[in-house]
Image (cartoon, rainbow, N blue to C red; front, side, top):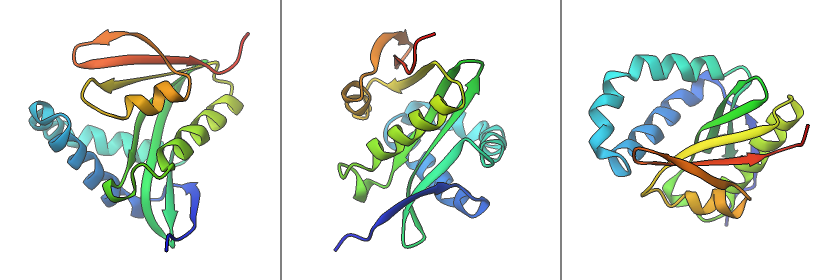
Amino acid sequence: MTLPTRLRLAEVSDLPFIFRQEREYMETIEPDAHQGWLAALDLNLAFWIECLPSTLFCVDADGHPLGYAMWSLDGDTATLVSINVLDSRRRQGLGRLLLDAFEQRVGSSGARVSELGVHRSNQARQLYQGAGYGTTGQDGEYVLFSKILREF
């Protein structure tokens, strides 16, 4: 039986979960960048804390986080920094739930465009393509995507 899920703003108590998920992602998808990520851990933690009040939320079941999304907003452009779902809960619609909630939240805050980069080996790019994101280029190992959320 699957417990019902809810979307909520992230809390300080979610940071260990976020750390574990980000570390697992780096070890699995981007192992060549893992050492650099560890060297920048203080900067990453500071960014996660900065996102807590408004641009980081979790999906959970019975109080246990299952995934999260975080973003930054610069003018009318929102950059999706990370969406991550527990491996055991992938392919159950949670990533799409987080992506849709992100788009709704940034759209109502004035963002006109959403952008993101995804590592070329990350299967999540299928999620973004299915949600209407178009490829805009490449930056090293990352495929860049963009979606217009609203016209002028």
